Image (tube, one colour):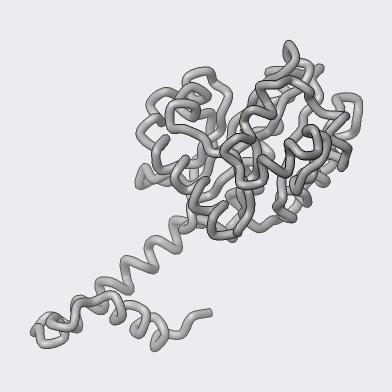
Length: 237
């Protein structure tokens, strides 16, 4: 737990120097701490996990920016998504979003289909920084998996990722590591890698191997329960 002194030090670092002379300095400190505590509380309670709709398009830019920023911070490759592509998934009913009572987005993921719905990918799993480490990714992953099974019950579900936490979640849901030959070969999927920093490495291996791990769920498998996780961006397209 963060001590009260540490909270004060953290807050004061963000206050402009001239405000230290203000008669309201103490009030500024207390109000800032109170605001911080309110944010932390809302991050773990009362978040609404639901099917995204066209009204959620207001979050599209924030979602795609955070996808890119998270990948850069972790130093890994990720296919860049556009706000328009995210909005399209919202309108099609192929995305799950987490929204707070204050109408802030807390997390997001969507599904994509390939080879005439033979394959479905669970893609773009991302959690807003303020809402990480409190089970948001776990809840979204569960719901996007259930949505995939509902819309495409006979499809094989796959994802590729460099994130250990995502691999762990996938394993709990019944996914197994596979070679790239066992997931979709549709050109559209691999074209999504063009904006990834590892794209040339993928091409050099004829799209048969790269830094991401491919994982696959087949419909005839049992569906085990998943466990708590870290929040990491899931790849793909």
